[in-house]
Image (cartoon, rainbow, N blue to C red; front, side):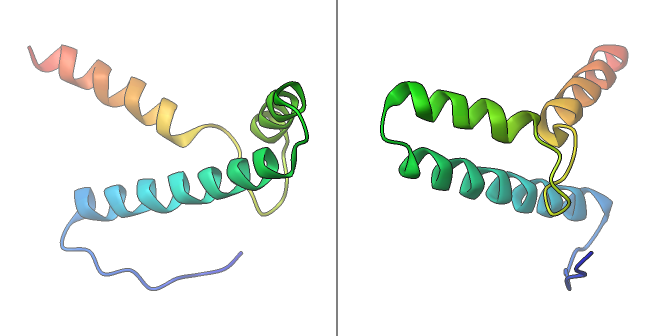
Length: 79
């Protein structure tokens, strides 16, 4: 596992930075697979393969969806 240096003022800022890094990593992987595909159908297969594969260097689970669900539930409890 690679460690990186991050400057954050608080936990919320650190969380947002982590989300941006995660999103960028997943987006770059997906774009590379899509560009390497010869057809739209092949690109769709590649997207699904990336999203369900468990590669050591790729985070497992879907951090963005899980976070949105959790934060949305917290927001509902506050109202």
